[in-house]
Structure formats: structure tokens, C-alpha cells
Amino acid sequence: MRKTFDAELLELNEALTAMARTAQDAIDVVTESLSTDDEAHAKAAIDMTASMDQMERDIENRCLQLLLRQQPVARDLRAISAAMKMVTDLQRIGDQAANIAEISLLFSRQGEVKVPQDIGVMACKAGLMVRQAISSYTGRDVETAHAVVNLDDEVDELFRKIKGDLINQVADNLDEADLSIDFIIIAKYLERIADHAVNIAQWAIFCVTGEL
Amino acid sequence: MRKTFDAELLELNEALTAMARTAQDAIDVVTESLSTDDEAHAKAAIDMTASMDQMERDIENRCLQLLLRQQPVARDLRAISAAMKMVTDLQRIGDQAANIAEISLLFSRQGEVKVPQDIGVMACKAGLMVRQAISSYTGRDVETAHAVVNLDDEVDELFRKIKGDLINQVADNLDEADLSIDFIIIAKYLERIADHAVNIAQWAIFCVTGEL
Image (cartoon, rainbow over all chains, first blue to last red; front, side, top):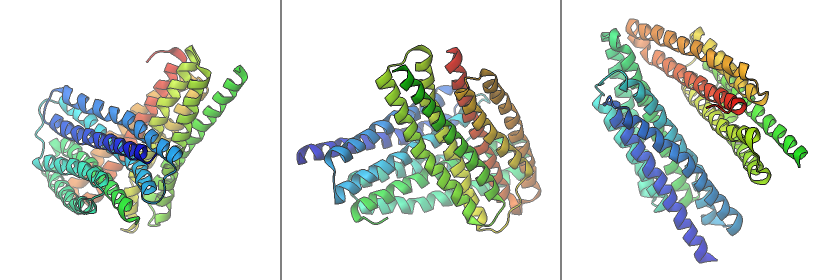
């Protein structure tokens, strides 16, 4: 019985890791899509986030099966409840990436668009946070989880900077204000992605320490 | 057998209607919360959207039970597959309302904030679209579904107007630019809510006509 449980837990971890990797890939692809007038990238990102819906259901089912059949206690119970919560955050991350992809599709109809470099940096950090957060859970690694929480301060700071820069651009160049506003909205979506990664990291910490 | 199926379908409709009403209430409450410095409204809206997660699971379970036990065909099969898709849109609507509530919580720490009237109008229309979209499904009412799709043009137009007005405010008053940007982001969330209502209306049409 115990062996089956451990094997199933391992599979659960693999499923979560795969979903986190898909989230990170979707963030990468959608960021790349912003600066090209080829719709294919944005559409690929939308497909990736859609596949995350199925992954979410699969992971929830695994968790429910583990809860119902194995009736775990203490640390194992925490691990599975944490996974149930995390998968919702992962799915919300997919939603935010899909929201960015929708804006990217509008961009691709306008021809080539010059994306502020900071948005690329922010996307890179947000994607890293997602993957590290899940890895802190699967590895029961509190230190990495805290690193994710700290990285969020950098992302928040970047968001403030991007917002400030773009607000000045709006004031300087009303003709391109729409584009600047779209970039602020994209940065806001990335900031939310980082927030969800922090939630995941906090569940990872709960899983080890039992503290919320 | 048939009677049970119809009774279960009725219960499914009631569950969807309740979820749509909660979505509309959450949009109302969160909009009200924007102009008060009392955190209670924003927190109430967050609680409402959290309760929608449980509703989503319940509705998905009902759909799965109906699919597996009753093996419906033709129109009934369309009705249940449509419900499965709609509930995802309803949940996304809850997410957007929760995103607005997060901004509202930040507002409440800044004291009273004057919300542009158009945002209230936009929220009211978006909430109405959500409830009408579900009602067009439960009533198999293609006409109402088309009315929802048409209302989306008005919401899009309002979004463009709000964005234009606020961009001008940013240019005129850089000191309050942050607040203007937050309003644009809120309007963007409302625009997404309306988009999800359109998706629901299109599923309602599919349910009757079989056309996607």
C-alpha cells in the first residue's frame, strides 16, 4: 500500500512539474509573440494554456483519488491539499498568459511592434518563479520557496518602473498612447503571474512546515 | 429514466443560474467597493468569487454524471457539453472580478477615490450580459443570446471611450497617472468579462442550432 502511495505521489509531482513547465513555455512563447507580426506564436501560446485546463483536471483527479483511496494523514495530507490549491494557481497563470496572447494577436495585425526590454525581463523572471515554485514543492525545498517570494519584490519593482516609464511615454506621445497602455496591461498580467507563483511557493512552505 | 434526466437537467440549469447570479452580484459589489474606503466590500466580492470555484466543480460533476449515466444524444448532448464549456467562462468571469477586487483593496488604503461614471455603466452592462447569457441558455432563447452579442459592441465602445478619456487625464495630470492607469486596467477586466459573456451566449446558440 505504502509503495503505491509513494509511486502515485511521484506521478502527481511529475504532472505538476509538466504543468509548470507548460506555463513557463507559454509565458516565453507569448512574450516572443509580442514582437512578431506572425500570429502563429500567439496562437501557439493560447493552445498551450488551453492544454493546461486538461492538466488541471487530471491533477485534481489524482489528488482526489489519493485523498479518497489512501486517506493520508499529517505531512502527506498537507502535500495533497497543497497540490489541490497550487493547481488552481497554475491554471490562473495560464489564464493570464492567454490574456497576453489576446493582446498579442491584436498587435500582430498592426505589424511589427517594439516591445520594451523590461517586459521581456519581467516575463523571464515571472516564468522562472513559476517553475521554481513548483520545484520547491516537489523537492520539499523551503529555501527555494523563499527565493521565489523574494523574487516577487523584483518583479513588483519592475512593474512600477515599466508603468512609470510608459506613463511618461503616454504624456510625451499621445499618438502612441494605446500601445503604451497595452504594454502596461501586459505588465500587470505578468505581475499577477508572479503573485500566483508566490501563492504556490507559500503552499510549498506549508507542505513542509505546516504553517500557512 | 427520462423523467430523472429532465429533472437533473433542470437542477443543472438552476446551478448555472445561481452561479451567473453570483457573478453578477460580485461585479456589482466590487464596482461599489471601488468608491468606498471600507475594505469589507472588496473582501465580500473576493469571497463571492471564491464560492464560484466550488460552484464550478459542482456543475462539472453534474455534467459528468449526466454524460456518463444517461449517455444523452443530439440536443441533450449539446446542452450538456455547452454547460461544461460555459462554466469555465463563468469561472473566468469570477477571476476577473477578483482581479478588480485586488485593485479595490489597494484603493481602500488610499482613502476615497472618485470612480469614472462610465466604469459603473460598463460594469452594469457586463453584469447584465452574464446573467442574460446564462438565461439565454437555460431558456434555449437564441434571440436573447444574440442581444448579448450585440451588447458587447456597446461595452467595447465604452472601453475605448474610458481608455481615451483616461489617457488624456494621464497626459494632463501626471501626479494622478497611477490612478488613471488602475481605472484603465479595471475597464480592461470588465471588457474581458463581457467577452466571456459572449462566449456563453455563443454556446447557448450552439445548444439550440448546433452551429458553432
